[in-house]
Image (cartoon, rainbow, N blue to C red; front, side, top):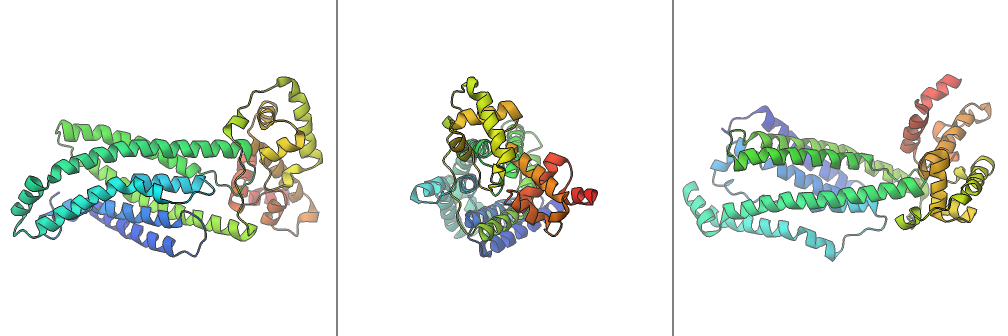
Length: 386
């Protein structure tokens, strides 16, 4: 923290600029999709959070205008990310007055930081500023409380976000075949990686803040470096999500209502004596009636047609085909795409056109699912059959 300009400072500054630019671009993007505004706020928050370290690495903290500069936003990113997760996983989720209470701690800490900054700014020198901030406004004590609260809230909000994603993915794979629903694998992996990193940094901070060892700044560099990488990742992924969601709105022209399939239904007691009957009906529906061509086909739809509970149908699929409902339906769609790619009668159609005729309703999902089931991209497979 000598005030010299380093590569680390360059990385943080570039990340700050990227965060602000991406937030503006995403905020101004003409899209009707949910989560756009809150993602912009997340990127702005991350950008300013990353800039906090520059006050020390560039020596700005020694100047009156930057001394105690109010950036008490450590407790803001956790609820923002959780609410963003809610927007991605809940079909009709909206921000209301009750959700604003998530931001109350951040507002309290920021209000205190503003008071400290305003009061100390009127002092003639740094020493006098420190006396006012510490003796009368308890700056370090409040800062310590903010750090502890930020760490605790990070754990709570991480758990809530991860649980919500897991519940959403369970609902998706066990009850929905429509490929326009995002699987949010990137978000789950991001949470897993972030959780591991935060745990490592927490253990590292013990040696710095409690044991007072010499590596007190190393874990901060890792943390702020990760924030910079997170800014780039969310900028790229957020823009991709907006494009994919916008294309889906254009193709469907309606808002698809998320079916109400509860986990209780999926986990209902299974009567094994009906397995063979259900499995025969399922094969009839798929191989003779081509029910998989219905792009919005759900487990609830299939159960209604067969006349059996959703739990029975789900268990029969798992037992007979050794896969969940989503993978089972998409496997038929992939096979149908392969048949049509081998049939000269369909050569006048594009890959996307064939995919959509076979039940897919997302181009990106089609390419990913086709590769998963065949080991090849659709274009590579098409070239091999010509």
